[in-house]
Image (tube, rainbow, N blue to C red; front, side, top):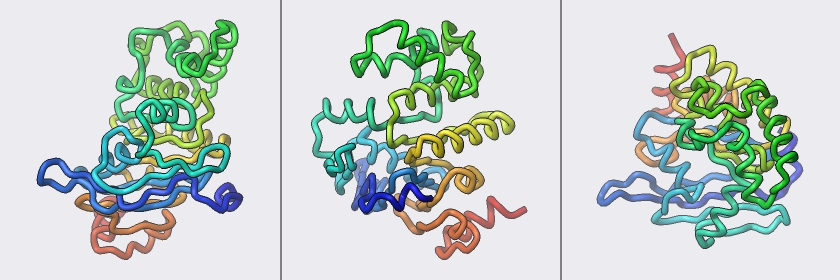
Length: 263
């Protein structure tokens, strides 16, 4: 993971994030660092707090405690949770991306595939139709969608194609960090495998940092350099992915690994 060695400062530093829903503690004192070019998996059973953590760190929901600092392109650490909404929106459409489990949540379903990809560029000021269409065509091809489908709406696409289109929409602005919430869930096994290969290829090519929420430990092993394991809103174990999966230390991780990975 050479990319992480070139920077003395984490790309993202999360400290003590907490979240309550009334009396229920959904997230408690979660902390981790993410380095440039690193993929971090967040794993655990349903209800463990994985998506709650992802949405809190991505400033998509308000946390009750903690801090999130992001290193901008100048090397300055920005306090994300202290930003105004306009600053957070700008960050979300430039240096960050967010891939939803349900692709329809991250796409405009009634406009063309090309418009879905070009929209983020237009949000940054690009108005030249030829350049927008050429860039959209390039990105459709990069995510293995035939360029002839550029004028088709996502409603005409399969689930796997919609997910690949959502990825293209997020990556077209060359972000440095992408949040992914169960990106392969609900897809056929063969479609999952193809999508995982694409994600692994793109994160390596772009030196892209990513946080991937998944309940599938095989997905974590394939994509992630490091992982954190969550139980009841807490991070109970973290470390290199292979190390955690091959030699889990926490009883919950041991149970998770034995029930999922072993026949």
